[in-house]
Image (cartoon, rainbow, N blue to C red; front, side, top):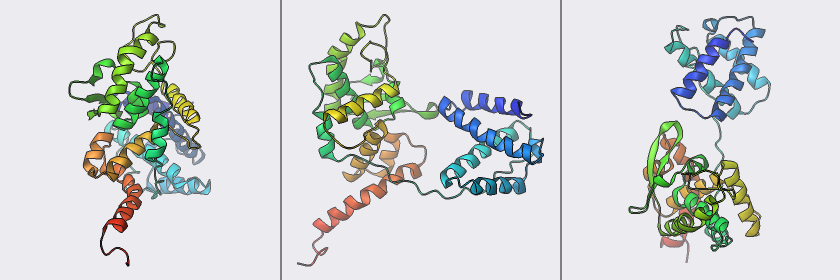
Length: 303
């Protein structure tokens, strides 16, 4: 056990209670801090207040020597910045030595998305007379119609759906909440599933559940279960692509922008805190815009 355990435990409590971060995120924060604490031990630094910019830059050099990716280094520095910001707030240190350390610029990968032809094949694979098929169709339609995260979809309750105005109430990351509209295709799929298939699945469970999406035993479907369902649908459609719930989120954003939606609206629908997170999709749509321009503008091409 290292000498920084108490500060580390207090930081984790702060992340869980005040910031409401996921267990997955806490795990990576702890892993990053452990790497930093090991470095401090080797440098003979026993007090977190002894860490200054010189020490941080030495740590950065060590990370680069390990040939870590820029993304990994950025995450580790971001973790330390949050950690020291917390320590400064609690008066455990006088200043934040990470505050003015610039993060290495990362090259964000352009998100993959599905073409409409690929989506149509997925929409045609489920048996809509079967409870599981109705559930699968409702899941696919919901993810594509709303662009919500798989964790948000997994957390949906019956009370979150308002068919009268065609919206779903979504509880997002960090306790952020939003309403997302959905269209007629998603409405039909959800109504069919909730009125029929879901009741059949629920009969197999020993306890009542308010969750919308249930597994074959009538219990709430997990995020892992949702991924498996999509994989099986891809197999049935004889597609060679890899489809995960997040790709449907990417597809939602890309198709919205391609059809003329403005960036701010898509940002709000996706639940992005920063417009920067949404702007990555403009890279995907540039090719589409160029095609439209070349095919539409009278002087785009020679006769």
